[in-house]
Amino acid sequence: MSASLSPIVSSTPLSSAVSAPVPSSASTAGAGTGPTQAELLDFVRKTAADAELIASLPLDPEGRTWVRLEGPGGSEAWLIGWPPGTGTGWHDHADSVGAFLTARGELREHALAVRLPTDGWQSLELSEGVDRERRLGAGQGRAFGRHHVHEVLNASADEHAVSVHAYYPPLPRIRRYSRTGQVLHLEQVERPEDWQ
Image 1 (spheres, rainbow, N blue to C red):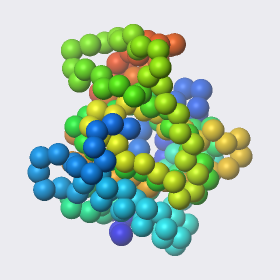
Image 2 (cartoon, helix red, strand yellow):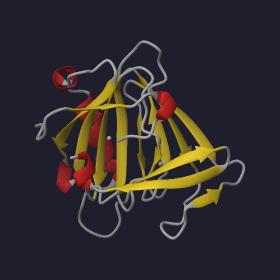
Image 3 (cartoon, helix red, strand yellow):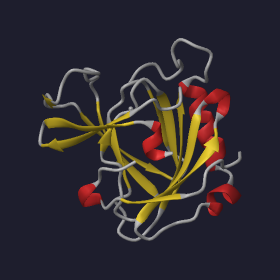
Image 4 (tube, one colour):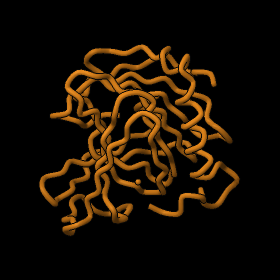
């Protein structure tokens, strides 16, 4: 694996977690010839086991850091460092399928077990019972399908976490949401030029 971009730092405290880098069948990526969700999960698992690569990621005490990696079959992949108390905020990955795995530390994922409409709304009231939470320690990960809405965070008070992520097709956009109780609000749409 080779990193193709310099590390980027983004300060994202858990309290304001709205910054950048799960379900359909775990074995299909959909139309096209790209990697499947299972292949993406296998890639992130193997990459996370590369201790030298994981140790090479510069860690910042206040903001997330990331380096783009060469993913399999034209996929987009990232190595991400998570200082204590940082997170992504609620977001989706549009039409991309993906996988991520914790290489060091522990990450928490809050996800919605319902598919949202893809366009034409600003606010939605979520039904009771759609929330899911996972704790993913070192070596644990998951694959997810298109339009998966979640937030990922490092809830630790004192330990960095490091994770590996892969998406296919490469992310065309990320929709960012805020959430108040059961109401989800679309806040912004980011394109690749916003995070690369």
